[in-house]
Image (cartoon, rainbow, N blue to C red; front, side, top):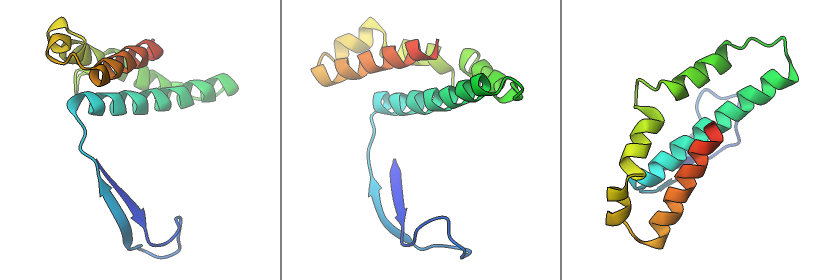
Length: 114
């Protein structure tokens, strides 16, 4: 994962802004899954809160997001994450405390989606 900062504050009136510093972080597949689950959960929470605040709001974005979570055709969604990281085989191969904590985090993030 790459993170960039800009030399100037955004938004800006110029057409382009030079990049400032950048950092590169290597993520394990499990850490990447957590990153994606956290992002999805944040987006879902924003949509739910917006629809609760305004009952007249179009529900299509919320319906699309929930459909994408429940029937994730593109990347397989929760079922692929469960098969890959929540299996006994994976847990036996990675018995360290750090991985166990990440697996617990995945379980909680998946439960939060429900």
